[in-house]
Amino acid sequence: WAKADGKSRWALYDPERNAREVARFTLSATMPAALERDEFYVDYQPLVRLEDSTVVGVEALVRWQHPEFGRLAPDRFIELAEETGLIVPLGRWVLRAACRQARRWLEEFGESAPFVSVNLAVRQSRDPELVRDVKRILDECALPPHHLQLELTESAIMGTADEPLEALRALSDMGVRIAIDDFGTGYSNLAYLKHLPVHELKIAGSFMEGLRAADEEDPVDVQIVSTLVQLAHALRLGVTAEGVETPSQAKRLHRIGCDTGQGWFFAKPMTPGEIDELLRA
Ligand code: C2E
Ligand code: MG
Ligand code: MG
Ligand code: MG
Image (cartoon, rainbow, N blue to C red; front, side, top):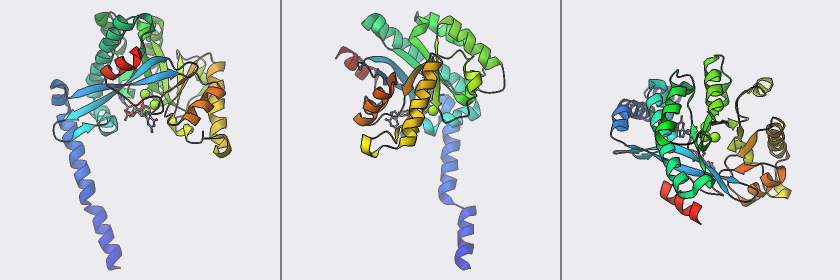
């Protein structure tokens, strides 16, 4: 009894939980100043065409170089930024950084330069200024719209409101590419998908686990990935597999007919300078 009692007390005054809450609060409160002080930066991860290993695009992934806590991954602060609304200016900052970088690659490598793929949070997809912001940033960077892709999750696209859809249509009409991120983990309305202004499906990394050497693969995962690839192609969309970590996964995906891969097997997220080297090689 004493033990059970002690346990429930710990549940109420859990010091670790308390520390986590304090850390969350601190991060959340200091984020606006961090944005001002340029503590955020962007890494880029190659999107590789499976047919010939060409780097067709790069995904922009934000990081926070925190003066006290060191380098923070987006999982530590994106959700907080969504809660406080800071995601809108932060997301705009990432978009501008990525478009500027894309412009530099365009100047150095010409039309074969990779497009940049930028993640949009749900809150950004519902921001009435979204289309205007994107247009202004593309103009400011003199970046042709097809060098920009925007990644939205199923929940951002399949929401109830019409505004995000109208915004996506306007962006797509402008020539910006639209991708659905982490596809297969949400609750997409497939009938609806047919009418969406989308160019690319990115299959969530969780399905890649079962794609191993032939004798040890998980037939269910293989079937799911094949079905999603066929679905994308039936809708005349491109399809990218996320979280590709091994050569056997890459080979299997190629045989399945997937167009593009992203993951540690090809390259980890890296600095713009490292992307330069990769593109020159
Ligand atoms: P995501 O958009 O699905 O991005 C892919 C994530 O998978 C990245 O994590 C990437 O580093 C990781 N990854 C890449 N290859 C592999 C692999 O082979 N195996 C495994 N296990 N993971 C791999 P990261 O950089 O930590 O980003 C996490 C999430 O944070 C992103 O997921 C995205 O939803 C969000 N995020 C990142 N940058 C931004 C941003 O600028 N704005 C918004 N709104 N969200 C962002
Ligand atoms: Mg993404
Ligand atoms: Mg993803
Ligand atoms: Mg994600």
